[in-house]
Length: 133
Image (tube, rainbow, N blue to C red):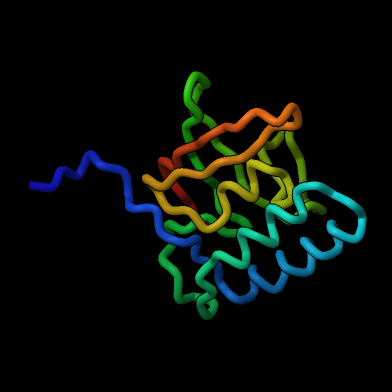
């Protein structure tokens, strides 16, 4: 018998085509500039299911989504995933080019993402709630 307390099955990230195009351009610009996170974003995009705009569920993390997530051993966090030009840490706006932004991209509540901090430590988060703006 299945229990609903199990996390959502880890499926490939789902990204709408307009976000895919924007993020792909950002990733290759970042790659040219030598940003480490560029290869992580390119890999994430390569593993994603790309769907037409408006065809993903509203609980998928995309550009503009406000995400509530848990990281083990830390307080629950709420962030809005944004284009790097809209970054504002004081307002909880995290860049899609930040390692944690890449980890959140395309996930749904119950799914987990992984990122590496600057010191190389592996971290894991679990998406709790997504509000699409």
